[in-house]
Length: 120
Image (tube, rainbow, N blue to C red; front, side):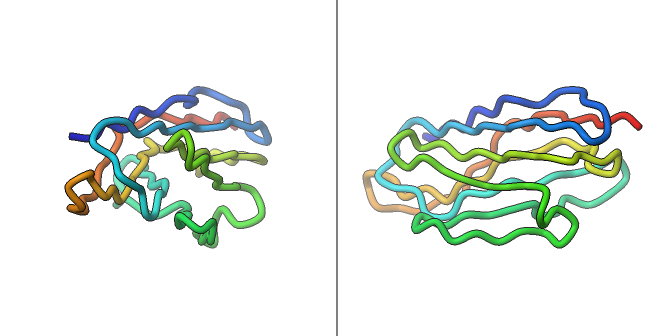
């Protein structure tokens, strides 16, 4: 089994910054892509940003230039630096990781979610 533990959410004023972290632990041989998704009230879950094991990144158009995804492979941790936050960024943010187990099976795991609220 693999656990993803997120931290760093909270309440911030528009224009402010937050940094989310997500640490993976458990039966891990390696991790392929890691990413952040979000779900706002009444909306579908959407991809925010993703990073491959080699460091290639992709972002939703709505966060390009404001958010930065990074990872520390030695710590099995992915980060999301969020700057210039807007009220429309308010959502529950979920970490996702494509994990290769020590038995060389690949599964997609999700964190429990962390709430980000941006006040105007």
